[in-house]
Image (tube, rainbow, N blue to C red; front, side, top):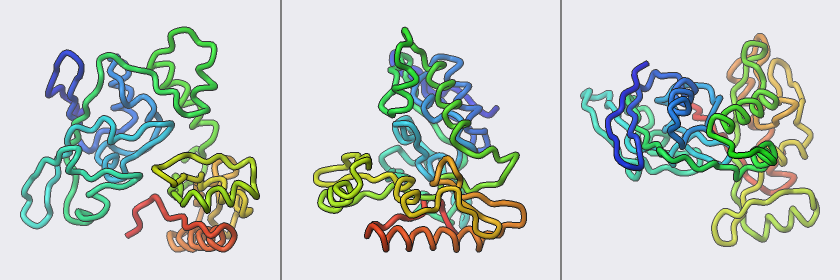
Length: 265
């Protein structure tokens, strides 16, 4: 694998990985050496070069938490530039590569800053529950737990094609969030800045009756409504049409705008 150590101090390892390295292979590489920071991002499909574009995140972690630098090559003159973490303009499932630099070039390398003294991240409820009662869990333990959770909730691409986690969790005003919760007490709200809350898009989609629903050759996963499925014969247009129907229905019922997490050309 195209992975090399490019920095090393008392607290951190700086690891440079080629864009074509399979992301989960990189996570395994880090965990096997006791370097923390990416274990909660285990079992996410795709390559390392795609990780900064989307600012991939799962189970209480985002890749922006560990990115030190991203190397980028421009199409127009084949010039190269290194972007610091700050210059990447990371946001929730967002980055400069998804916006200002979309279509302008490709990511060639990503450098991660990994801690030599990992701290277990159990902020996510499912992870906290799985770790309960375990003595001195390691980042290996966390990786195994998260890989198992993902396998239980997400479709096997060797069985059915899918477009992955398709929608972002919307952030709404406190007033709207509490209004929805007043009518649906089981709704879990997550603070997202002063007087704003994040609402799980999966909950909104399920409440609108889409969970497990199939429309022609596409559908919504029965265990994780954020995931859109592509059965044999499915087309991109069918997936996009289904996503538009979901977006419109959620808007009509809850007055909440959900938007795609994926980058649609």
